[in-house]
Image (tube, one colour):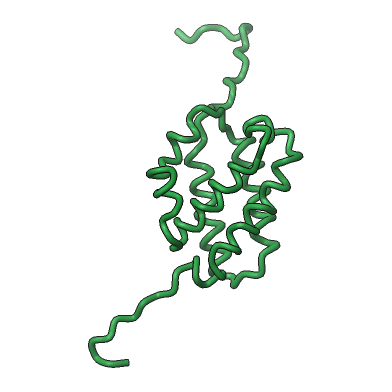
Length: 144
């Protein structure tokens, strides 16, 4: 390598084969969501737009062309998900389907780990519903 050459790392998008990988990943994911009693109520009847949005976002996030932002603006994940009650159960169900979809893909281990870490972090970040408080025990004496 020449002395002043700059090493350019390959994006995940390129390493996995481009848009087709993300379309297939998202299709497998939504095949699980379609019958999920926890997640299905959060989605519109027609899952096609949701599939397209997620595939576009993921492709862009992982180094693909910025088509998602050109079409929909800044991702603003928390804002876009704010209208939906997302708790630990929803996060866990979402992660279960995404993990299964990712594990079905033929990926090098380091890319799979990187993607799983991102999905875990993003899914946890979107939690906006706190678990219910435990019932109070009215038989306890007040602390004085």
